[in-house]
Amino acid sequence: MTTTGADRGAVGAGSAGRSWWWWGRRRGVVLDVSLAVVSALECGLEGVGFAQEASLPVPVGVLFGLVVGSVLLVRRKWPITVVLVSIAVTPAEMGFLMGIVGLYSLAASEVPRRFTAGLAGMSTVAVYIVTMVRLRQDVAQADVDQQDFDPSGWYVPVVSLFMTLGFNAPPVLFGLYIGARRRLMESLRERADSLEQELSLLADRAEQRAQWARQEERRRIAREMHDVVAHRVSLMVVHAAALQAVALKDPQKAVKNAALVGDMGRQALSELREMLGVLREEVPAVVPVAGLASVVPLAAVGRAAAAAAEAAAEGGDGGDGGRQGGAGGDGPCLDALEALVEQSRQAGAVVELLVTGEARPYGAEVEQTAYRVVQEALTNVHKHAAGARVVVRLAHREAEVAMQVENGPSDATVADADLPSGGNGLVGMRERVTRLGGVFVSGPTEAGGFRVSAVLPVREAAAAAS
Figure (cartoon, one colour):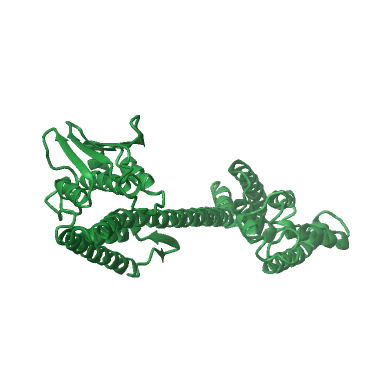
């Protein structure tokens, strides 16, 4: 069975609720039935002359013509059959419409081109022979009737050739054009469907990336708020405990501790206000554009939030030492470690800072990460090892910067500040370090203390930041 491209494209569109045999739509049925009726009437009339020439009864010739002409009804399903029948009845000078429509249907169908060329050639030869025989008879008759008519030897073949080409060439060429156009439309339709599927996949992938970006920014903002605020709040609690202990014994020290608590409280409130103010800004995360989900980089929101929070944290009156130089000035830098250590000393901790190697500026993310690791480690000391001696080591190496915060066992004579812990400090430090391709190690020491170590590769971190 052979079907055309239009038939396949129409299947399912017009026959969803009703079957039309091999037709896809109702108008195809109407067209083919109309052509078959016209062809049957034509062949029936031509059957009269055929019956007279073949010495057959006229009703037989008419019936034969009606049957032959009705074959055109199956032109969409079996175009080869229609062409073969038209070739078979060519000597009977029958099936003019059937031959034209059959050649067109064959050329426009999905039949391999070698079969189309072969059948078209057979039809051309048959028509040429019949036309030349009939024309030669007419010329001979004219020669008898008009003695002055003397056609040359080329007249009959040339005229027969032109008549044959005029009969066969137009339907074949037009059918090839329509078939090529249908195949082109089908390929374009398939390509459009595949592009639509790809766009759907891209939209799903963009939505997944947007969801991942939102989750990542939530974790990042939570980590920033924890690092920026928890340190000051922890120091406030430590100073409050010290204030309570020395309020009656040493009023001057109590006043000093109260002033420190007030300063740190105001800085913490300012940090929270700036952070929440940025988070309240409505920035669309996903914007549909041309069927796709275009993801607005949520990292920009996170960076703005972190920058605002760190601006409040580092821009206070002495706080963490301010934004000093440090690789772009986007946050705390390693130059502020001395001020950070001094804050812990003011809270009563014994902290020693050891720096080895030649100090030099690093990338902004490297310095911020190193600062935050030391800050969170000191916060953990205040929470879990009150009164312990702390050693902070910072090593500047050729292609990396290393930091280590190690504390001894807590002093039993010092009252525990009883600070709450969410258990996310070490997780946040590890995420910061590994994000820049560094190594993070933490764990207890043999002496009963705790050690936090991190190594940040300078080159890899700079590449990741860029």
